[in-house]
Image 1 (cartoon, rainbow, N blue to C red):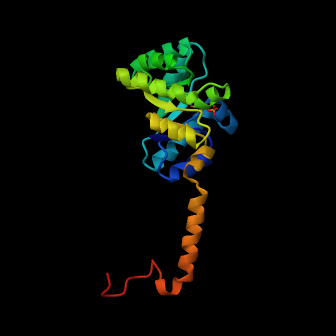
Image 2 (cartoon, rainbow, N blue to C red; image 1 turned 45 degrees about the vertical axis):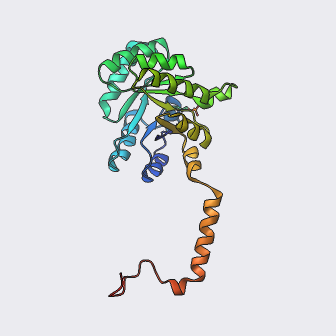
Image 3 (cartoon, rainbow, N blue to C red; image 1 turned 180 degrees about the vertical axis):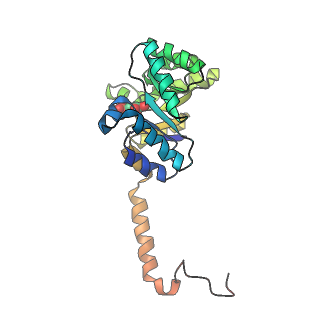
Length: 233
Ligand code: E4P
């Protein structure tokens, strides 16, 4: 499963990318607005962070027009900025039309704000590169976000659609793990959730004990980094 960070914050992206396990970023107008930076330069800076680490990332940047002509115009422009950019369009009828046009031109499109398997079916037919079902926001209104992902994965497998399932609006590690178990190709998550993926109190406690035990026997153990004595291997 690929891991994307759902943030436009450069520090969070740098931190995540330095771990070597982050494959991309999803931004949306709300996340970008929080950073208060010129959009183009900001998105290009995100791409550069991956480039410096030689990671061929996917960086989603969203259109803000609501008519298909406007979305297509913005999408073509966004795609020119950097080869990592994936154009994000909302899953309205206008968005689906824009997706069909952009996909036929070879521009990668991430169809966002997906809340039903039927929307996911349509965006796959329109050639979307990614479909973004929003799990947490469905859970918020007492529906089952993970069940939606399961159905989308099932439909895509039945018809061998190439569109990758990008599980979005993930609110905690269980959303990530369950999406992975169902076969979602990607999970995008806030930095806070990313951190929760690798933190465990027993890991911290275990390490503390290992190091205490090592310290007690330090004199007899020697130094890992000390040069080997001649004749020893
Ligand atoms: C995905 O691309 C969206 O930016 C995101 O996952 C929305 O998540 P939220 O419901 O936590 O805002």
